[in-house]
Length: 451
Image (cartoon, rainbow, N blue to C red; front, top):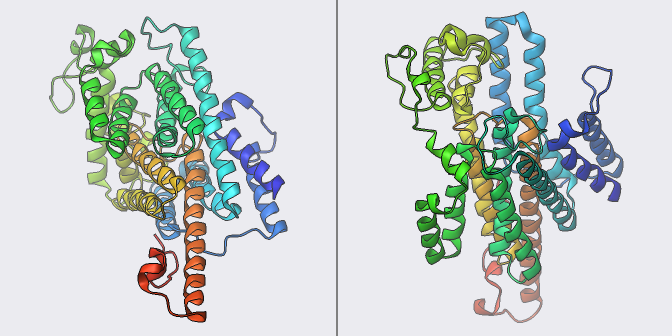
């Protein structure tokens, strides 16, 4: 079991740091990530490791996989010229999400779950330290579009938005440890300190979407802790110009600042005058083109086809991404695309809620709240970007989801055993009054529901 834990930890470390290791093989389709995955599966088979309970959310995942396969089939029928690339995109999309099932079945006890959860936190913390180094090397007093923090995804500024959403997804875990892990003072201090560090690093990714996500997450997590604290946070957010770094303020103000060089060109195809900066304005025009694309082929243009098709509807943005996953999946896989996405996100939120209410242990409350906020970060992060199928960004999230699901089934199983023992103890002796039994024993034991 120890070697299996180490292989799983290696997966978590390698996933967001692939560009830093730069390990390549001459055989097409063979890479370190695939090898680690297959090694983990082989060890599970050899050690006969498998969760006795089926994975929660499996139906939601399979529904989403089916929609992706349909998107591939639609693209194959429409334009098979690049079917190999489309098939690779399908494989990669499903592969990273299979980490949910791998980590669910490989985690046989809470000790393993705690270890792997700690690895996820450590990987995120190290990435934040890398980001701090980049910010200091670049300088934090002057905004420059080409000098944005992009750790752990290398040094190129085009990866800054990916880094920002990566940090936004995992910062709630640190905040939950700091605010809800009762009885663990040192852990709480480390959690709060790491939260502050990651938030500071996110500032210098200059991702306005992540600024909004961080503000929403901080407000939600503090609201769970204290209404007074939440009120103070609202006041701080409203007066951000008095404490935020000047470069961050400048970046936020750029959203509605339209320079003459940007307003000079002709109106957009819709005839609307530009109201925002070029980055924001381009998204609206791409989405307008995507709406026309969806209207022409509501069954989907094909998985991995959006960049090839958008030029026909918005010529200026040919070969551009949708910058919104819900728009992207609708255009590529049809109207079932957003339905499958929302079903999966809703299932993950329900899982987080069930874990939070599972028992009175601080671990359950901390894990449930932290994971629930991470799911919300994923949902919000795909409104202004399309990272849902980005394995480097989302890989550790799918692994985290598998760990949370396994924690839920393990705890539910332990709860059922305790209830059964309590009932048997009552049958062997004099029947105990209901008020003497634990609250969990007053109801009939039932298996963990499929979410």
